[in-house]
Amino acid sequence: MNAANEINTVFSILHDGTITAWSGDKSLLTLTIECLYLAERMDTSFDRFYVQLANIDNMEFDPWTNPVDIPAIIKTDFADIFKAELEILSAEVKNKLVVVSCMQHDPDFDYSGGNLTISCEAIKVFDQNKREMTIDQLMEICKSYWKEWSRK
Image (cartoon, rainbow, N blue to C red):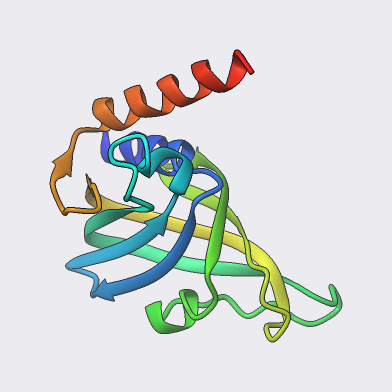
């Protein structure tokens, strides 16, 4: 699996999770993604994952303005991108870039969400105790959750 497909898979699995914090820079960016319904399957006290993006080529956030007639200004500075907590809706690969559709619920911002575009060399996922997980392990947790949910 190439990096774009791995990034797409991780963000697709973590849909409904929320990016609540970030640290680092373009060489190594760590996102805190709160995703209780999956994290607690590893340990009932867990509520988040850490996602590391290495050697970022491109990251930008194209907001969905509210009201819609406000001109959208694409954000490229991490502090601006992650100023609002971003809830992950979906992800897809477009032209070798990953586009993550996000919502944000804070009425103090003039946008309701937007598209977070990501291109980087590699992605890693860690549990709340910062133990690295494979994408396959994350996928199994997700499949297990949805299989159980479908029985309800």
